[in-house]
Image (cartoon, rainbow, N blue to C red; front, side, top):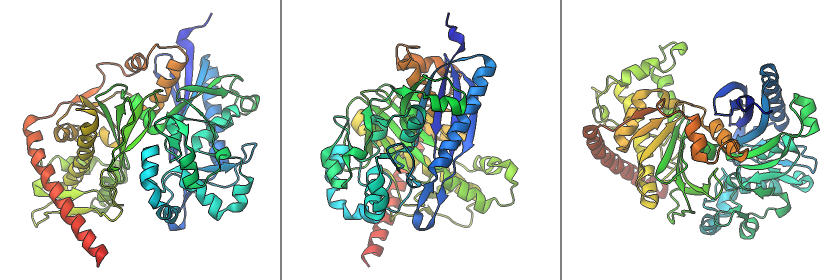
Length: 506
């Protein structure tokens, strides 16, 4: 007889710098977390690569450690659920052997190719929900064709990191709709590879994986993976979706009126949608959600938490590294709302959504001799949140008012920052108790697929225990104050944009 209490789901979460294996029980509680660093190689000319065999070795290591925990505790593994970062590209032969290093999602070597295809951008956006960008997969596939023809001729499949992990586990070349929607090759309206997009990017249709809905069983663990890790043969392998989509699922973005904001190195904003939402001005992206048949609006801001870290490194050098952000956080509390008039724009690597202008630069404005480093630090946090609010207001034009904003990421460990979000957003902000939102989303996906729960909402409410979340309500007076500050910030941005334009013209 099956002991439900011992049923276990293993989630694999592959990020840009870390890979995690998280064991959850049948109610979503974390049993064990194993981690491995997966730092890419940063090369000249903004090229970013990772060795695929090293990545595979670390995946095997994590699976072996997880297997040991399962066996020691006498648990029953019922599924492996996989989520990962999106848009990286790896050419492999028919046996799945890597033919070159992985070109990572943030690699910029394809910028020139993107410019050459710019006349197709409107068509690409209308079909895929995304602009032509070095970030996405299709242009990387074209780069191999143009610049590494000897590799391209040997290629059987162009895989994402997620697809490579799934192949390692179950020996099948498949990808789900949510990951495919980050390639520039999937028609977001019908969830199929689109021939027009394939032709625009001049890629080979046979190089693309078979498509499945997110939450589908891709296959089962092979005898080879069992031999390498000790895991049983025949365990269902589930493709839970892209990391941001799974993160949204793990934060309860499962119904209209829900938006999630993750603030780490950069910030990602995702909103739930029942149908594709295409903004003709291309200010945000539309992708497939982790729940089959759903969509998500997505806006990315390139440098948010990284600006705060930069300021801490530059202006708090006397602080011992072991104190982390303790001193700068404490000083931020000493600066009043509005940071004594100091405004900050976080465009340190150009602007992301909603402006998408690579010529934009970071800025502090209205500094005088009474300005302290605490004021500037607070201005950074206010600037990040006001940039995020601009995207929230944009989303709401298309999907209606959000009833709450779910927040996650390293910055949300600072409760002042969460309250600042509530005040500037003029909305309730919720930080859930389980911080591993992406892995939890992958667990929710698998738990529903395995029949442990009848719905995604039931699985979410079981795992993110009601009453343990931190809820931050807006202060009406401060919200009204920040409305004025947000308008001043818009004026500042437009003035600087005009200056950048004049510089480019001259």
